[in-house]
Every structure is written in structure tokens, then in C-alpha cells.
Image 1 (tube, rainbow, N blue to C red):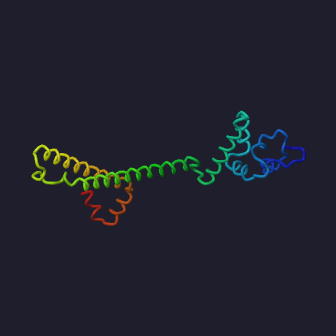
Image 2: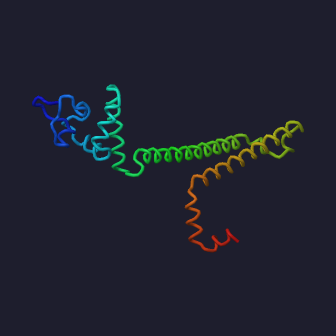
Image 3: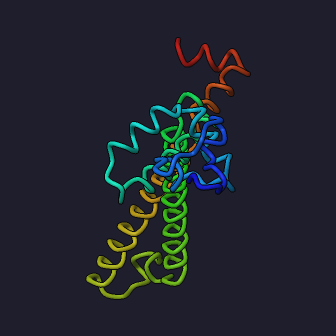
Length: 185
């Protein structure tokens, strides 16, 4: 950037003269010194320079954006960086999917209960149906419906139990030593 204009953020931080062909100048403008400072702190100026020189010019801006993002993530979480943020978000997605499955199971149970309440003929005793064929058909469909409802309620219970952490069960067992012992004896 020479020629009397302000040096880029990199050259300003490193306290050196900004050359006309400075590799950092297009990506680290003088009005955003924090951008280079954080990348320099995490990766080092010579590593950044090597990375940028190895890339085609049309990919360098994207690389700098990625370096800035990773440097910010490393400052927040020095061990995991971006991977820690991704893992956290994946866990949240899994928990939300499980909650959605539980909610959908609950909706299905409610719908089946409402359907059962709207069809009272299906639960009448066989002697009130009339002919034997219709009574057999209605009692069979009522039994199947009740069986499906029971299965859905069991599934709902299992899903609800699956979403709660095993830590809750361990904490409950730890609060009552007799319960804990009864699990192992």
C-alpha cells in the first residue's frame, strides 16, 4: 500500500512498512485492525502469509474469512474451536428432534383418544350391536384400536424417558440409598 497511504492492519500491527505488493493489504484493511490481530494471535503472521501465497488469488478472501472465523472460535474455546461449536449445535438438534418425536407421539395419542370418544359404538357390549357379524367386526376393531392406543402410550412413555438424562435417575438413586441398593441386589 505504499505511496503515502495508511499501512494495512497487518503491517501496522507488525510495525513494518507496507509494501506495494503486501499480501495482507487486500484482506486486512487499516480500518479493521482487530481482524488481523486475532488471526495473528492464533496462527501467526508467517503461517498466514504462507497459506495465502499457496492459494490462488480468487480463493484468498474466502480463506481469510475462514481464518478469522476459526481464530474467533479458538479464542472462545482454545481446545475445540469451531468443532466445539458444531458439536454443541448438533447436540441441540438431536435434543430438539427427540422433543419433536415426543410431541408427535403425544398428538397421535390425543387424536386416537378423540377418535375413540367419537366412536362410542365400537366400545358397546356385543349384545347391543345387533347381528353377530357386525358385533364381531366392531369388537375386533375396538380391540385393535385399544391395542394400538396402548402401544402408542408405551412409545410415548419410552420416548419421554429417553429424553430425560440418565443423570436424573442416578441423582434420584443417590438421594435414596435403599433404592440404589435394591437395583444391585
